[in-house]
Length: 232
Ligand SMILES: [Zn+2]
Image (cartoon, rainbow, N blue to C red; front, side, top):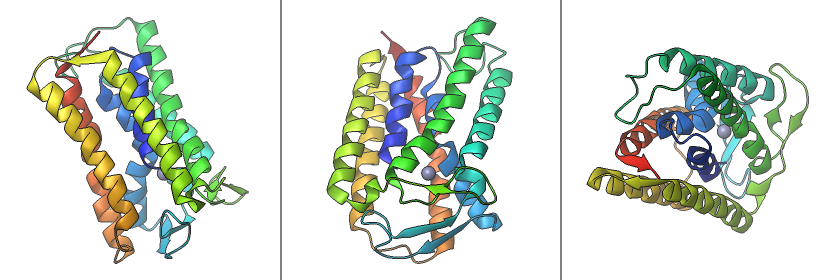
């Protein structure tokens, strides 16, 4: 899935209003942030196969380390652990950071871990049966929403609208950056998504990996405008 992961990140702000959207966005995107690195390392494989599903020309031949259920649970635990370490000092993490008691930080860490695993659930809905449960074999699952472009647009578009709406009603801009950098982010994602539908298949696997690495900037962008918005 694509927009659905961003929807989950936006919606999570309602559950963890004191936590920067940078964290909340990085968690559901994590699998797709790791994927291009593992592709370049040769640990995972993708093939360009126009018509593989109606929505994407990519055949995800093997991605056990970034996209299996077991590994996503492990990445989720690791990501929650990194959050616990980084959030120990309340002065870090931007203007909006608030020192939280340990029990609350544990709750946020658990939420972040769940958000990482949510990527697997949404990808199972979207992909044809290519999603592994465990690395190194085992069954592959997938419900194949991407076989229908209209159904994909309805489901992902609705999720995205709900997620953005929850974020918009949970926060308000403190300044122009908080308004325009947020709206710009939403518009950028919508245009990127639409362009996926009309773009020709990518020229090669390396091109996919390198262009995907740019996605690392998206949680930073979210962290930036979220620091210019307040809760309530
Ligand atoms: Zn994915």
